[in-house]
Image (tube, rainbow, N blue to C red; front, top):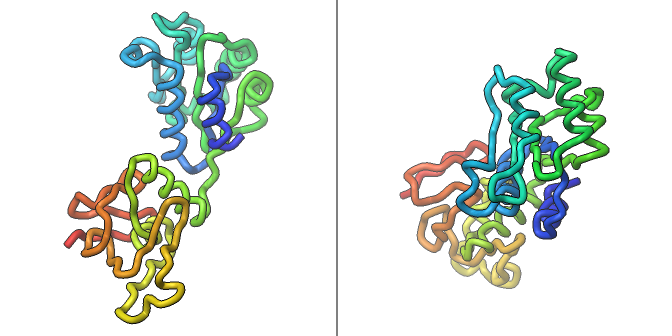
Length: 236
């Protein structure tokens, strides 16, 4: 499934006991992880019901043991297994058997989130997960989709920005500034991309006529910020 489908699942409250987060868009994956935790764990109970494993020497018994524990004052427990542990690519048969057996018969009061950018579909755990859980693919967004995603995030935050600001973030060419007298016809219309607007007279980020809105976790309130395409902008 795509992350948009997971959003619907989160809103509906029908959770699977195991999820695999895979693909290069880890920022969106982290956002979805946080949304999932907020939905299944009551506020204030995260510390006793959310466990994250990310160390290289993590033992598989520690992971499955926590997964089998009942949640405390919460309908669910969330267990997160980061890719940094290397467990999902282990060549140890004992590790693969233990993890695969748990995923084949998971606790229904635990939501286990596995992280693996490029999963090995031959592994026992992967084959078991296809039957008991869901695979959420975070494919790299196209420039058009990224612009819409940024616009949606800003819209939810009650903010607006301009197409000229967003283009470098998406890896596209910046929109050249309009000169006086060149705003006729198409220039008079605001260009929109999922909540993004370009108005005549806009300038570069932070400049006169620009909006000082945060973009995908970046903000023009700092002296410098780096776009996704690697371009660094300085605030005047």
